[in-house]
Image (cartoon, rainbow, N blue to C red; front, top):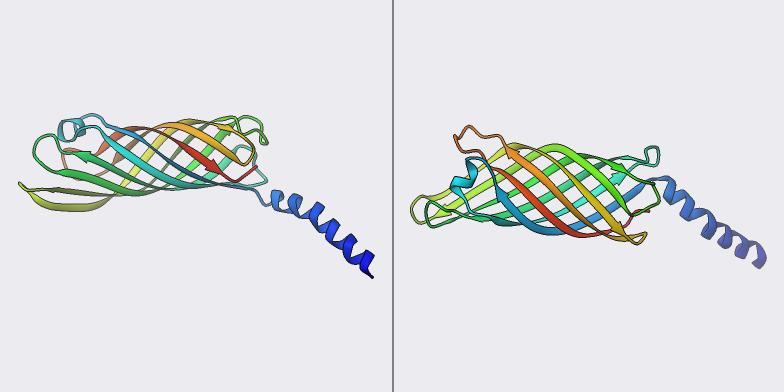
Amino acid sequence: MRFRGLLALAASVVVAPAAVAAQGDIKLALGGGASVPVRSFSDLVNKGWLGSGSLTYYPAASAALGLRLEGMYAHYGISIAEGTQTEVGGLVSGVFQIGARRSPNRIYVMGGGGYIRTHQEGPGFGELSRTDPALNLGAGLSFGARALGMFVEARYVTVYTSDTVKPQFGSLTGGITVGGL
Protein backbone atom coordinates (compact mmCIF):
# COMPACT_ATOMS: atom_id res chain seq x y z
CA MET A 1 0.00 0.00 0.00
CA ARG A 2 2.80 2.38 0.88
CA PHE A 3 4.57 1.56 -2.41
CA ARG A 4 1.43 2.51 -4.43
CA GLY A 5 1.22 5.86 -2.65
CA LEU A 6 4.87 6.53 -3.38
CA LEU A 7 4.38 5.49 -7.01
CA ALA A 8 1.35 7.79 -7.34
CA LEU A 9 3.31 10.70 -5.85
CA ALA A 10 6.23 10.09 -8.20
CA ALA A 11 3.89 9.91 -11.21
CA SER A 12 2.20 13.17 -10.27
CA VAL A 13 5.55 14.91 -9.88
CA VAL A 14 6.55 13.76 -13.37
CA VAL A 15 3.20 14.35 -15.11
CA ALA A 16 2.05 17.58 -13.41
CA PRO A 17 4.68 19.92 -14.94
CA ALA A 18 3.86 18.62 -18.42
CA ALA A 19 0.13 19.16 -17.82
CA VAL A 20 0.73 22.69 -16.54
CA ALA A 21 2.99 23.48 -19.51
CA ALA A 22 0.26 22.25 -21.86
CA GLN A 23 -2.02 24.98 -20.47
CA GLY A 24 0.23 27.71 -21.89
CA ASP A 25 2.63 30.30 -20.53
CA ILE A 26 1.72 33.30 -18.39
CA LYS A 27 4.32 36.00 -17.85
CA LEU A 28 4.28 38.90 -15.43
CA ALA A 29 6.36 41.93 -16.45
CA LEU A 30 7.22 45.06 -14.48
CA GLY A 31 9.14 47.92 -16.05
CA GLY A 32 9.84 51.59 -16.32
CA GLY A 33 11.51 54.07 -18.60
CA ALA A 34 11.30 57.31 -20.51
CA SER A 35 8.31 58.74 -22.31
CA VAL A 36 8.83 61.29 -25.08
CA PRO A 37 5.88 63.37 -26.36
CA VAL A 38 5.66 63.66 -30.14
CA ARG A 39 3.89 65.87 -32.69
CA SER A 40 1.82 68.72 -31.22
CA PHE A 41 1.81 67.03 -27.79
CA SER A 42 5.51 67.90 -27.48
CA ASP A 43 4.56 71.62 -27.54
CA LEU A 44 2.40 71.12 -24.43
CA VAL A 45 4.44 68.79 -22.20
CA ASN A 46 8.08 67.98 -21.48
CA LYS A 47 9.69 64.55 -21.56
CA GLY A 48 8.53 62.35 -18.71
CA TRP A 49 8.78 58.91 -17.16
CA LEU A 50 6.59 55.85 -17.44
CA GLY A 51 5.94 52.76 -15.32
CA SER A 52 4.13 49.67 -16.55
CA GLY A 53 3.01 46.22 -15.54
CA SER A 54 1.60 43.48 -17.75
CA LEU A 55 0.39 39.91 -17.90
CA THR A 56 0.98 38.08 -21.18
CA TYR A 57 -0.63 34.73 -22.00
CA TYR A 58 0.78 32.44 -24.70
CA PRO A 59 -1.63 29.52 -25.32
CA ALA A 60 -0.13 26.08 -25.86
CA ALA A 61 -1.70 25.84 -29.30
CA SER A 62 0.25 28.84 -30.53
CA ALA A 63 4.01 29.12 -30.10
CA ALA A 64 4.17 32.67 -31.40
CA LEU A 65 0.89 34.50 -30.71
CA GLY A 66 -0.10 35.83 -27.28
CA LEU A 67 -2.46 38.23 -25.53
CA ARG A 68 -1.20 40.99 -23.21
CA LEU A 69 -3.12 42.95 -20.58
CA GLU A 70 -1.20 46.02 -19.51
CA GLY A 71 -1.51 48.93 -17.13
CA MET A 72 0.67 52.03 -17.35
CA TYR A 73 1.30 55.31 -15.58
CA ALA A 74 3.08 58.24 -17.23
CA HIS A 75 4.02 61.60 -15.72
CA TYR A 76 4.99 64.81 -17.54
CA GLY A 77 5.64 68.42 -16.63
CA ILE A 78 3.57 70.93 -18.60
CA SER A 79 5.89 73.18 -20.62
CA ILE A 80 3.57 76.12 -21.34
CA ALA A 81 2.54 76.75 -17.70
CA GLU A 82 3.20 75.47 -14.21
CA GLY A 83 1.57 72.13 -13.68
CA THR A 84 1.70 68.44 -14.39
CA GLN A 85 -0.02 65.95 -16.62
CA THR A 86 -0.43 62.31 -15.76
CA GLU A 87 -1.81 59.49 -17.82
CA VAL A 88 -3.10 56.21 -16.47
CA GLY A 89 -4.24 53.58 -18.89
CA GLY A 90 -5.09 50.03 -19.61
CA LEU A 91 -4.22 48.42 -22.92
CA VAL A 92 -4.95 45.05 -24.49
CA SER A 93 -2.43 43.98 -27.12
CA GLY A 94 -1.75 41.08 -29.37
CA VAL A 95 1.88 39.90 -29.12
CA PHE A 96 3.69 38.03 -31.89
CA GLN A 97 7.07 36.63 -30.90
CA ILE A 98 9.88 35.51 -33.15
CA GLY A 99 12.14 32.79 -31.80
CA ALA A 100 12.00 29.29 -30.34
CA ARG A 101 9.13 28.69 -27.92
CA ARG A 102 11.39 27.38 -25.15
CA SER A 103 14.00 30.11 -25.52
CA PRO A 104 13.72 33.22 -23.33
CA ASN A 105 15.64 35.19 -25.97
CA ARG A 106 13.02 36.51 -28.38
CA ILE A 107 12.13 39.46 -30.53
CA TYR A 108 8.46 40.43 -30.48
CA VAL A 109 6.03 42.94 -31.94
CA MET A 110 2.85 44.10 -30.25
CA GLY A 111 -0.16 46.23 -30.99
CA GLY A 112 -3.63 46.86 -29.68
CA GLY A 113 -5.91 49.33 -27.95
CA GLY A 114 -7.48 50.37 -24.71
CA TYR A 115 -8.33 53.46 -22.70
CA ILE A 116 -6.09 56.16 -21.25
CA ARG A 117 -7.19 58.55 -18.49
CA THR A 118 -5.49 61.94 -18.81
CA HIS A 119 -5.34 64.27 -15.80
CA GLN A 120 -3.94 67.81 -16.04
CA GLU A 121 -3.39 69.98 -12.99
CA GLY A 122 -1.93 73.45 -12.49
CA PRO A 123 -2.48 76.79 -10.75
CA GLY A 124 -3.51 78.58 -13.94
CA PHE A 125 -6.17 76.15 -15.12
CA GLY A 126 -7.27 73.96 -12.19
CA GLU A 127 -7.88 70.28 -12.83
CA LEU A 128 -8.99 68.61 -16.04
CA SER A 129 -9.59 64.87 -16.42
CA ARG A 130 -10.91 62.70 -19.23
CA THR A 131 -10.82 59.11 -20.46
CA ASP A 132 -10.33 58.42 -24.17
CA PRO A 133 -9.60 55.44 -26.43
CA ALA A 134 -5.97 54.78 -27.39
CA LEU A 135 -3.95 52.64 -29.80
CA ASN A 136 -0.39 51.39 -29.42
CA LEU A 137 2.21 49.69 -31.60
CA GLY A 138 5.70 48.59 -30.64
CA ALA A 139 8.50 46.04 -30.62
CA GLY A 140 10.72 44.52 -27.98
CA LEU A 141 13.44 42.09 -27.05
CA SER A 142 13.33 39.61 -24.15
CA PHE A 143 16.33 37.76 -22.81
CA GLY A 144 17.47 35.94 -19.69
CA ALA A 145 17.00 32.61 -17.96
CA ARG A 146 14.06 30.21 -18.31
CA ALA A 147 11.54 31.63 -15.83
CA LEU A 148 13.21 34.95 -15.00
CA GLY A 149 14.16 37.37 -17.72
CA MET A 150 14.52 40.97 -18.76
CA PHE A 151 12.99 42.98 -21.55
CA VAL A 152 13.50 46.20 -23.49
CA GLU A 153 10.74 47.59 -25.67
CA ALA A 154 9.81 50.68 -27.61
CA ARG A 155 6.29 51.72 -28.51
CA TYR A 156 4.15 54.50 -29.92
CA VAL A 157 0.85 55.40 -28.23
CA THR A 158 -1.80 57.74 -29.59
CA VAL A 159 -4.87 58.82 -27.62
CA TYR A 160 -7.99 59.79 -29.59
CA THR A 161 -9.56 62.98 -28.21
CA SER A 162 -11.69 65.78 -29.64
CA ASP A 163 -9.00 68.27 -28.54
CA THR A 164 -6.69 69.89 -31.08
CA VAL A 165 -3.65 68.55 -29.16
CA LYS A 166 -3.84 64.77 -28.87
CA PRO A 167 -1.63 62.94 -26.36
CA GLN A 168 0.86 61.03 -28.51
CA PHE A 169 4.12 59.67 -27.18
CA GLY A 170 6.88 57.21 -27.75
CA SER A 171 8.28 55.25 -24.85
CA LEU A 172 11.38 53.20 -24.19
CA THR A 173 10.96 50.83 -21.24
CA GLY A 174 12.94 48.06 -19.66
CA GLY A 175 12.24 45.67 -16.84
CA ILE A 176 11.91 42.10 -15.62
CA THR A 177 9.65 39.21 -16.56
CA VAL A 178 8.69 36.34 -14.27
CA GLY A 179 6.98 33.07 -15.19
CA GLY A 180 6.39 31.14 -18.34
CA LEU A 181 8.57 28.67 -20.13
